[in-house]
Image (cartoon, rainbow, N blue to C red; front, side, top):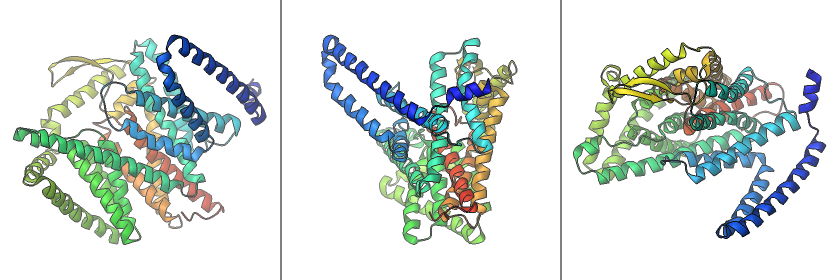
Length: 482
């Protein structure tokens, strides 16, 4: 039985391309039928047909160039970084594109080229989670979940699948680690730019002083926190002053944008990641970190004073008060207390099925303190409780194993003196950022929305790729000179 199943799923490359050509001709015939139908029933849609054909030709060209295709998909994640109410057409099209990319990647690697994709324990655990997460839709029906919400949650979690192509590209491409790292920094710069523009627009439209004090931009805080740590590591380990200056500018932009989100959870997470960095580096670089902190504060304050004038003192006072409130927020902040109450309510529901969970998109009821009424939701701010509620102990255990292993892989790479400089820096940066997310996940779910899931996945892929490059070099392959 096992042999027959293996032969069923194993397709020779010749058979694959033969059936592929048949499928393409069938698709062409179907497209011609659709075109004829549009000409008859919806003639106003005909002008868009050439655009669809051009997009199809572009996709065909890209899918023959795997690494370029991956870079385009990763850069396209900018679509999900800017929040807009409702479902946008660009989000739908991009979602179809990246799901097609993932499906194509797994089919070709597992069934056509038969490559050993699942080599490490963490890779097997992640693949098992992706399969189990998809199969958990059965629990959604059993517990009366909302299918639309379940699909949305599945879409966000499916981004975890990008770990595998990111790791592969980091290993196979000579400059893969650098390029993917640069794409993440580019996305962070893009997010920081628009966050700062929105913050400035909010200040300009403020009429009362309280609007200035409470002004904030709540989007992209997860990406800005991670990129602040990545660029901080890059500054500390830069080999030339030109590189250190460029990385320093990137760090200041990302860190200033993170500050203006006024997200205390991610402020604390950044401090944890910076502390891990401080502990792991040598004494000379510890001095660099302390000096950079002082210079960074002066630079951000000076730039703000230049742009905002006296308003900067009001903003600084507000930020200082909010930062000082971190230690007392657990007892005094209504929103944070409500999140703990929410987690406790979810834990009560978890007791009914702690092993398998309740599936995607299943609602639960709890008393919402700010509104002083009962509410019904599917979202849980605590990432660990959310995983446990949706997927049970098996899902929580698999994700924590993959997460913890990613941190350890990054630290292992950094500690290997014979590893390439790039691999060591990126491994350390990924380890610090992933550790920081362990803290913020208590109050801000990192595996519910697509943008946060993406940055977690990218960090895991970079850590795994850097470690695999070191293993190849130790095994006697070509030395890693990246």
